[in-house]
Image (cartoon, rainbow, N blue to C red; front, side, top):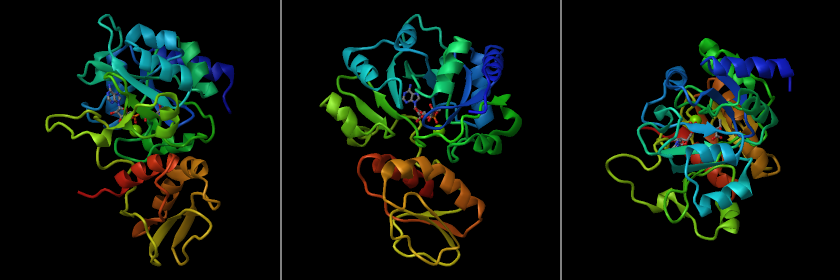
Length: 316
Ligand code: TXA
Ligand code: MG
């Protein structure tokens, strides 16, 4: 948006020199580093304070590029054809000659790959000519950034440059699908919904269908507490106290809160997803005793929204 071609060139040269650059995608802002370099990937973990068992998504320009690093089966090819470029991440086996830093896989034999549709992300990938490892550009466990200013708040000078593409229009992270077995498994619900995937590929399972092995995670990033504001979060609120902030949804926002933000006065789930992280962040900044959240329908994009809200509300 506010970026000239020379900003993109500069960002690409920083990435190639092993520095970190935050950039917008259609979902949320990513904290990018050269996915071929152990040193650059280690810097990403350090800047976020991210646990090292939690692997990173590698962003690529094209299916052909992704194919150099991971092995696509027919199911993954179909999903990539149907949803790329876009907010779908595929977890696939690493090729034996894969040149990506082992750190992106955090000790697993798979890599999560995604081809973003955002024009700035695409321009950066093309200019840099390297795969970019990028988690969401927030400190670990905190709310994902959907505007350049949020990245500055989260990471300050831990990042060499932030490309500003304005607000992310989807606002919620990509759907992560494990394609290493016979049936795709949704590891993280996201902006491509289960129903959209099912339309293309009738068989699909959800991570919640599995009993997780006691030793280790099938989906390492799905920590119970995540996306957390600094105050407590109360879900499915049907009333609100005067010292609470309210995250409302729909035409009948509750009255009497300290501050109110409405995710979508008309009850539109796309609009709610796009507003979710910005509004949570703004309510948190008003230092309420608690953020009360009105019920969101558990359907379509509401499934991903509720997933993020449950993690924001999680208390040990
Ligand atoms: O929309 C998005 O996906 C954003 C933008 C920047 O692309 N990225 C993002 O990255 O949300 P991050 O690191 O915050 O979340 C990546 C998720 C984590 O839950 C992680 O555990 C999972 O993907 N993941 C990454 N590699 C994996 C792998 N090899 N196997 C299983 N899960 C993996
Ligand atoms: Mg994240």
